[in-house]
Length: 116
Image (cartoon, rainbow, N blue to C red; front, side, top):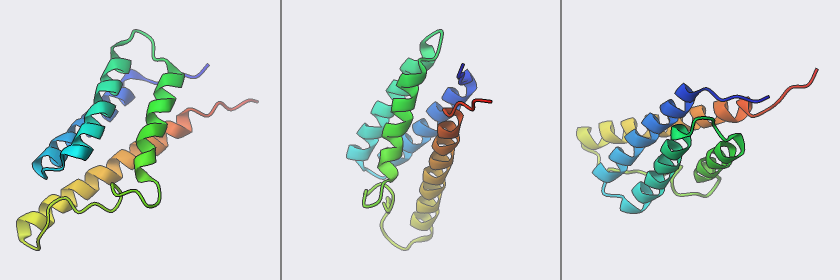
């Protein structure tokens, strides 16, 4: 039986929350709304006594779709300009993107059931 620990869902919620806040700072409301939806779904799944694996798998898959080739989220420059502050904020945003991607791909590997 496949089991996902609650702390992994909490970690996903924290990263999504950071991304939502950063997107709002960059005044990108459209993507902020998308990730706010993902965050609310994550929190709803976390509140249940037992994690519904299929529901969580679908959520992880949907978030990973933001990283597909050609999607604007992957190559987004959130804070325009070449100032030190813009470069620092964009670097932080790209670190959040990478952290979320690594977290999602790790979760995806946990959905695989190995049979002896």
